[in-house]
Structures are given as structure tokens and as C-alpha cells.
Image (cartoon, rainbow, N blue to C red):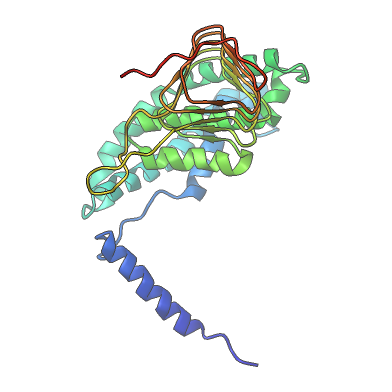
Length: 300
């Protein structure tokens, strides 16, 4: 029986790897990226600190909750700080990660100060889910079992990091939730209070999407870009506003696709499997069968 030529394969892979690093100008000591595995543990710890009675250890005694929150939070933030340091070093190619200790600490400090606000926002999301789903028996059930809430915990934490300029760490965190839930929320999206994703599988929310308060999405909804313009060299233009705006109290049913920088007005309902590429005014009802909305023309 012929043996597998491991050494030969290793050499081939080394050549491919070196070529790729050379193209990215990172051939000499390529910097490490934040670790998805470590960040998953960080988020688990942060979630436990935010909701110790439901997402923390099952044997916590009432008198020890604050101690548990403190120790869990301290561990998670220390691990997060190391991942932030790696991102800073990666973006400043050629500078060792040790040079970013103070900056990583300052960013972690700023992130930590915003955790109470994130918890309050998540409480509104839980309330929206409870009020919006007749199958929900309690907020506690939603917190421990609903994929939409799991995705939002990751998103709310990642969005804070994204606003601090930590785009790689933020993206890794939301992609952890994406792989677990099938819900793809870019950390750059701006989402208001009382947000509910029912069922959730297949939901996509793009980087520049803006979602108001009391908005509800069902499974397989896409808030995406309509087209991808290129510059004079044929490269994709990045970092421009290209995703929809959903105003307050909008409901989007399963399978709907909303594309481009358009606005869905307040209290509008978008039916299942509808394709929307033009802005619609407040109180609109769009379905496959008919529409009582008059599309708003795009600005010249």
C-alpha cells in the first residue's frame, strides 16, 4: 500500500502559504489574528456576567452572584484585551503586539463601561420577543433557547467593539453567532431597541443597515445591497451606505428581500417573499398579491 507523501504535501503547502503572504506583504513574521475560539469563550463569559442567573453557572448561590459576576467579567475582559491587542498589532504591520498594551487596555476599559447599556438594550429585545411570540411562555425561556436572542447578544457586544474601531474582533464575534444560529448580522449595522428576530434562520442584515425601534423580522429576510459599484481600477467600492433603513414598528415577513439604500417607512408591513428595491412611505402594506403603497422615487 502506497504511503501518503506527507512531507511532500507539507512543502507544497508551505510554498503556497509563502506566496500568499508575499502578495499580502506579510512574509516576514506575519502577525497573529484574534482567535475565534478564544473570543467564543469571551462572549460566553460576558453573557454569563450580563445574565448570571440564566446564562451563568447553574450552582450560583444568591448571596454570591455579585462575586461571580465580578470574577467572570474580569476573566472575560482580560482575555478580550489580549485579542484586541492582536488586532491592533495586525493592523499596524511590523509593530510587535507588546507595543499595544496600553491602547488595548484603554479600549477594553471603554468597552466594559458600555456593558450595562448593552444589558438594558438586550432586556428590550427580550421583552419584544416575549410580546411578539405567542408561543413564548416566559422571558427566561426566550433568553436560554431562542436563536434570535443568542444572535443579538453577540451583535450587541460586537457592535460596541465595531464602534471602537475593532472591526476584526467584532466580525469574528458575530460570525460565531452566525455559525450557531444561521443569523448573519454585520456588527456595523445600527439596530434600535425592542428588536425581535422570530425563528431567524437565514436572516441577513448588512453592514450599513439602520433598524429603528420595535422592528420585527422573520426567517430568511435579507437587508442587503442592490449593486456593487467599482472604481476606475475595477475594484469594489467599499464603506458606503448601501443597505436599507427600516423605521420604527416595521414588520418584515419570511423570505422578503429589501435591497439598496432605501427607506421602509414607520408602521409598514412587508409580506413574505416580497422583493423591495424602492423606498415606501409610512403605513405601507406590501404583499405579492397587491400593494397599497406608492413607491418613493430614488433621489436624482
